[in-house]
Length: 70
Image (cartoon, rainbow, N blue to C red; front, top):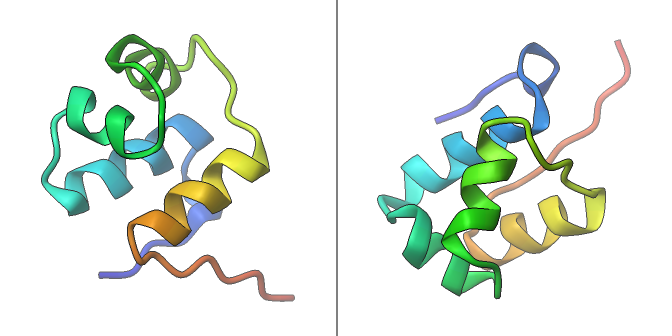
């Protein structure tokens, strides 16, 4: 599956990746050393996510992040 990240905010991207992994927020959080509450806050836009975190998630869950010039 492929998405255009420009169409989503960071929390939505994290949620999409989590849904692709078929993990609960708790198990997804454990996989990247974060709490369920932390994942919930990110997905709901209450906490910001840094690029390093997004890259960590991508690496851990075999997701490719591509940046492309228009």
